[in-house]
Amino acid sequence: MEPFLEFIRENLGSPGLAILISNPQFAFIQLLNSISMGMNYFIIAAGLSLIFGVLKVINFAHGAFYMFGAYITYSVTELMGLSFFWAVLAAAIGLMLMALIIERCLFQFIYDKEHLMQLLLTFALVLILGDLAKIIWGTDQYSVAYPAGLAGATNLGITFYPSYRLMLCVLGPAIFIALWLFIERTRWGRITKAATQDRDMLSALGINVPVIYTIVFLIGSALAGMGGALASPFNSPAPGMDANIIVECFVIVIIGGLGSLWGTFVGALIFGLVFNFGSVIVPNAQDVFAFLLLLIVLLIRPWGLYGRAESEGQ
Amino acid sequence: MGNLEVNDIHTSYDLSQVLFGVSFTVHQGKCVSLIGRNGVGKTTTMRSILNLTPPSQGSIVFDQTDITGIATHKIAKLGIAFVPEERQIFPELSVWENLDIARKFPLVGSATWNEDRVYELFPDLKDIRNRPGGVLSGGQQQMLTIARGLMGNPKLLILDEPSEGLAPKVVENLREQIRELKKSGMSILLAEQNLSFVLALSDECHIMEKGQIKYSGTPTALRENKKIQEEYLTV
Ligand SMILES: Nc1ncnc2c1ncn2[C@@H]1O[C@H](COP(=O)(O)OP(=O)(O)OP(=O)(O)O)[C@@H](O)[C@H]1O
Ligand SMILES: [Mg+2]
Image (tube, rainbow over all chains, first blue to last red):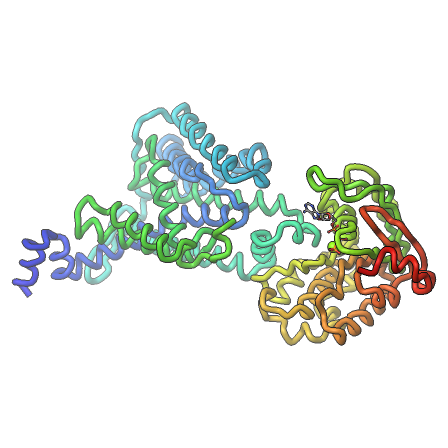
């Protein structure tokens, strides 16, 4: 074993890979890091994907919504002194209100417009919201404390692991299941699915399609806000955090297939794995791996792992 | 209930005008047909009634309510069901899910139409209730589209070329079911290319050409008028 590890360390130049192979505890921690990161991203990307799936609008401002979620968490916990739980709730509700204003005043007018128009509008929103955040919170980097009960580590038998991150590993799948049940098992969910397929027919059946659009936009935006709130303890709220997240979310939803919930879940997990294991094996090259993966998926299955081929050409 | 009045409507797609002053009435429990060759404006007339393609001029009144220009879902809620030519089944939803989303909840009393009743009318649908809409045959799709329309308990059923692309046996079956619906008091507006289908069901026929009604009469009168048939219907 030792000569083999030696070979990896010296000849391949990857001490990280050698540790991964020789230390199962370390590998297990990396696995949990991947899952918790993937689940945080899933919550955000699911909102982006849901909004695209129904409204057919790619909302570049989704990252800014995430940033607002993080800032709101800071304000509610650090300035108002309320608990983290209330902050997450406030972030989700705050983003819903913001989304309601944006959808009613702007988005509702661009559903029938060409993609370029939609792109310009959501991009303008990125700039406006970025400046708005600076006006409200300035340009400082804030830190948000871990919630009281989850600040420590949990003993998993083979290793200790941060409780907060474990909570993310549970919360992500719970949100996935809740969204899945809503879409597949409720009449409203079925109507939402139908809205992705044929708006005119749906309204001819007596369903108020604009209301469905508004609700979907609110739910998707609330997920961004919640994702930002959940990320804030380890991803300090600061200007520019919206730009990184939107790129990463795009990688995830394109890998999984835009508009597919299951695809977003799998895409987020893959992204977490590639990012974490990639950075251990070749330090500082984690982004390269993620984009390489994106490139491969785009070349082999341009519509993503779980997307549908026919929606690609629209 | 179920009275439709279309008064002098003009409708365009972008720059090209398609309807030039179409007027007709559908009384309760009657079947009125729009006939004519391809592209004369039958579908556009129906889309105008539902405001899917808003008319630029004229008015549409349904049961004393002016429905000109109001939102499509509100028109549907007043009791008009549309069975489109392209069927427009939701492909990813199963048969029963397609029916379920079309269900309307009446404010008073109980619904006349529900899943069980449409399965009585179209027993074939019951056997395939879990199949996705996207994999149905033409005949099954047509039955589902009509059944879906009925789930909303309409007073007026608008059928756009229901017999198109169906086997003669299926068409015959469909004709009987539409006759049953009519007997129940439902008003029907029908667009068709199949003349015998029209003549068997209608109380009044309107022949369209170039976005206008050129001839109106009873099926009996039309059946005997070979000259009109020649001029507007034969291809
Ligand atoms: N979406 C559209 N955009 C532009 N023109 C259209 C559109 N739909 C229909 N038309 C045109 O409007 C005219 C009337 O079409 P319409 O579909 O109402 O005819 P129709 O009588 O239903 O014909 P068919 O028997 O083929 O169904 C045709 O000339 C058609 O080319
Ligand atoms: Mg037509």
